[in-house]
Length: 406
Ligand SMILES: [Zn+2]
Image 1 (cartoon, rainbow, N blue to C red):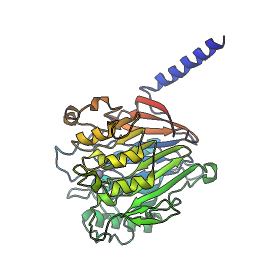
Image 2: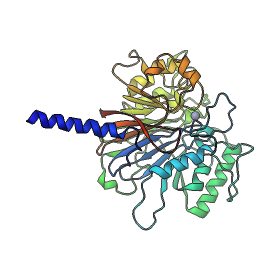
Image 3: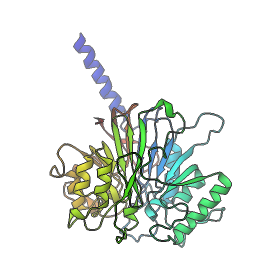
Image 4: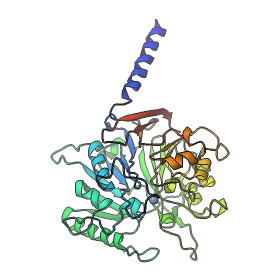
């Protein structure tokens, strides 16, 4: 009799699982942690819904300066700008706040670094907001949803490592000024080392096992002691924008997740010992359960030393161009010679050419669609949902896991 009951229970569980395929993603529930890697084909954008409903948007997509065919087509289609697609996605999944003010809002909007495929580039035909500035990426998202606090690596002077001045940055600063004056927007510079800059805003006491550690930005990495940091580059070195990207580690109980923008170093493919930024960040960060691949899985990122220290069970590659992920990078991520043990790779968008030319990519857990990591209350386990990105129905294509957090 006992056996029969457990068999029936198993059947029930299997049915519940099967019923989710083809159905819209079940809504986030209080206590869960959702990490949405949104595929617009035009850059990176991740939405994190934290256990108490606090929302953190990391990058907003919106690349518009790259020439085809290098850049991938806009998803779901070209009828709207990437920033607007991101805003519409957010409207569908952000929890409604309780209380009188029922408008959904983005509590934190973080820009990992100042490139168009992360913040939205301003080009000749970028439309103009009635507020004076022009629309792409973050400025476009803010047309649709209110933002509480913006966190970037450059505020307030945008002068490191040299004064930043181009149409995208100038427009962004006009946007910040207008929003601060008229919408009460707060702006902060990301401070490496801290673990209290990004915090739960609604019920922090309900989730003491949750924290976000600021691991790296602007050439300074956390030492692992208190909130202290040290420089990664020597005075003579001139790191590019990618190598200054914001990196953080999110922990929820046993679950750990890493996100590091476009961290990369051009010479790691020929000599991994030249990986000064990723390796330093990985040493400070330590092992994780899941990570977003650095720099869209490009050839110059996710070095072997970096991967060996993080040993992710799940890797999400936010692709936006041909060659994402790069052949050799995909090999490093999948090879047991890099580190032993199983791992699943989810790629948001693989072009036909990249699919044909990347060895073993057909074994990836997914090569097309939004990738949602859903961590159960308390953080002990998580599942990965892949959603159909061809329309806005949020239909589940596949469910992987549950994985146990380590
Ligand atoms: Zn990028």
